[in-house]
Image (tube, rainbow, N blue to C red; front, side):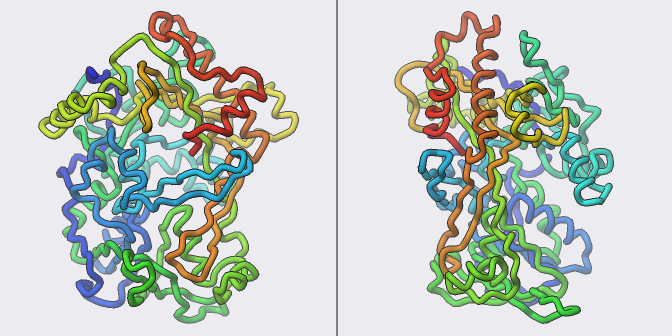
Length: 512
């Protein structure tokens, strides 16, 4: 496979190849049993929080991460290989509950079980969201600091723009005026329906444009690589403990009649609960940053959640908060496939072990070639027409006209195993990005090493299935643009009617 055009803007930290943090794998190596702040979860957000807290040398900060280090994990470093970490020790390996919206099917649900969390294994796309989203959040929280205008200094503290691996001219591929080149983390159509968007991170997401990715010089820039970079890891007040699973937070007192939880209990992650439990005290705060699944799991095991359910599974209720673990929200995703008149697609190498080895050697030697990019470099954010019939039944859930209802993820071939039969393909993934379906994360036992029951409840709302149908139809219109006339041979998927599309959607193997 010839290297596809790397028309991506790579957003990354200009840092050393690896995070060289003084990461501890054994609790006995910790210098103390109490810290000012304990951050539970060394993932995408947890390492950012820890980094910011440790800026103050008077504070001692401990991060406790269940997974292992990201250092030297080849499939995390290589942007194109992210899906190779699924169903490995770097993944929590969750399987969802059967979902009504998928006809009773369950599916695997990848989550990063590695320092950096899912930022060490995701698809690397960098998207801020629309200005309408931030302004709505500011209104909801009654805190103007969350508005699009007021959040800009913090977005720019995070961003450091760098050149793509091949150093091609990026003029016309992004808008430098809306980005920063000095932060921490490295970070086209002929049809009127699909307008070109120069920069989807400008606050207006609508249109088709080049992706921006958390890649630096051909290497993934996860939160572990950027926020635990050597200059941060050298801080004597910051400690990171890997391979330790937090089993619960425990009560340490009461303040104004409200229980205070500043104790953290943890155990060896590989012990499956058989090993001894250890304790750490946070003198100021415990910050739970275990993600949408991990945090409610820990809270419920700590006796914080719906009291009736906790009692049912053998956990003593301490704080009745029935909303814990509820309203899990995720986007459904479907891969739409076209047979194309080309051999310059991912399948060519994925079916040829010799060629794949050559391209892997190229990445090892130069951090260039097809594996220096993620699996897609063009995306689209699009809206339903204002007069869509679905709005007769449901209020528009988007935050405003700058926010999308669905997304296109356009890839130069099939990217997930197993690879389709002989042929070369173009894939447009469609995703519902304003879902109304809500799911849950609930514990099923009093053993914190037992996985929770994860039910994203995808496509439970008629609104979501309507949006997915319209997104698929829009992708087909997009692929009929004159530019594709000599490239696209035919659409592989045959569903046309609403009923046929619903069956195709609910049976999709790439739903999450």
